[in-house]
Image (cartoon, rainbow, N blue to C red; front, side, top):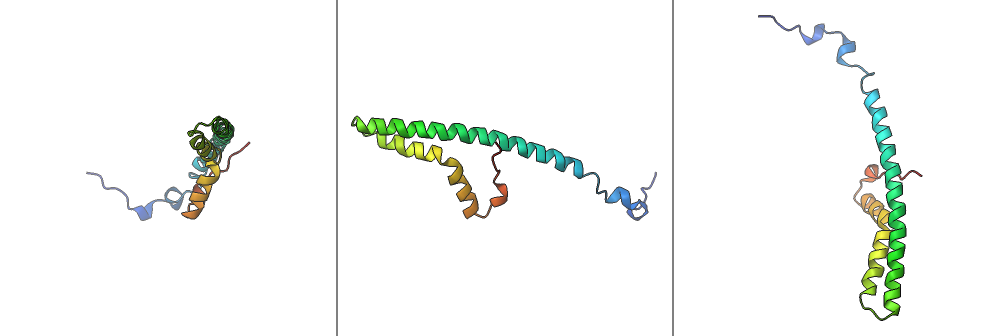
Length: 103
C-alpha cells in the first residue's frame, strides 16, 4: 500500500497558484457585461411598454372607464421598474448585486 506524500513536501506553487483564478474572473466579467446589455434592452422595452400602458389608461379614463386608473398605475410600475428595484436593493444594503445596464 502506497502512502501519500505529506502536504508540506509539495511545492508552494502547486498549493497556492495565483494564475488559476484569473481566467474564470475574466470570463465572469464578460458574462456580467452580457447581462448588462440584455438588461439595457429589457429596460428600454419595459419603459416604452409602461408609457404605452399609461397612455392607454389615460385614454380609458377620458372615456369614463373606471379600470383606466389601474392601467395608469400598472404603466408607472412597469416604466419605473429599474428605479424601484435599484432603490430596494440600496435600502436593503445589496448595492453590489445591482448591474448597470450597458448601451
